[in-house]
View (cartoon, one colour):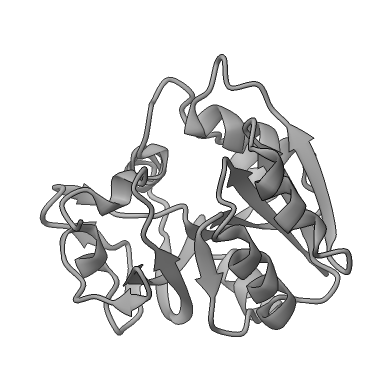
Length: 215
């Protein structure tokens, strides 16, 4: 049993090293890393290349027809393992990933996502807006009162590869493909889990839609 980790990357020179080091520190040592590179600059690629001990593959993707769902669906098709972690290129995992536990969860749930702690220029900030969803308890089928729909977040989320490929993300959306996907799943009678014991730091970037209203 092993883990595939799917990362979408575009010019995260100052963050991708933290992401990859946290994979070394907290994920199974034989994890497969698929990096979907969206025309990143050379400095960003050089940071990835520092991590020679990791089993990573860089796949260069054209951004001409980009959508988050399209990139992720393509990435899942390139993963070798049954369990896939979608991971932002500007997060840092800070809790041990127990693959056996995750695998057992995915026998019951269509997705399992973890807690994200917002980090603004090195400082942990009070969670508000989207960050207020990340509670200190496990929640089945988390519902967002602010968004008026079920809430899932792909920055740190586990899926079963084969299930996702049969039930892919929508490719016509410019964002929040995770929310649309999970609301459709719940409408079919399926469940998902938020596990607060799975934790990552999520770093501020000026281009990140998740951070609108924070900076």
